[in-house]
Image (tube, rainbow, N blue to C red; front, side, top):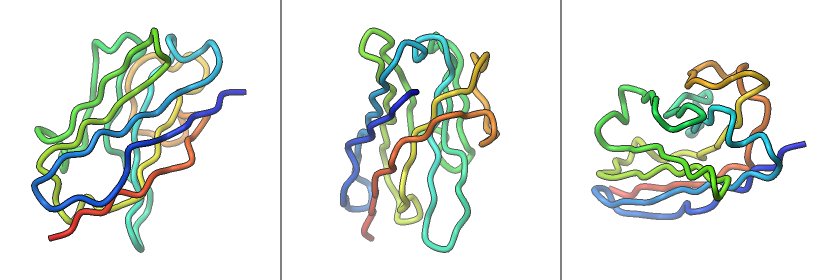
Length: 126
């Protein structure tokens, strides 16, 4: 069983930055893709970013491209989401997700992820 612990959320003014971290337990982290998703008020969960097992391939939602960066440190079993130039519309609960068996490349499909972190609130004030 994999456990994901998310940290780094908080309140920030528009234009500011935050870095989210997601630490994973177990021995599958370094061989699986990881993803970040978010769910805002009265919205469905939406894809934010994903990264391949090696970190060599990434994918971003159009709404965050150029502002957010996903990265990983396999030695620390941790994936990060650096968020810059934050906007009020980025306000949401952010979740990290661990790829299911054999998922090595980034994907936007929720069903391809087997484990989910507890979520962290990010609030961007205008």
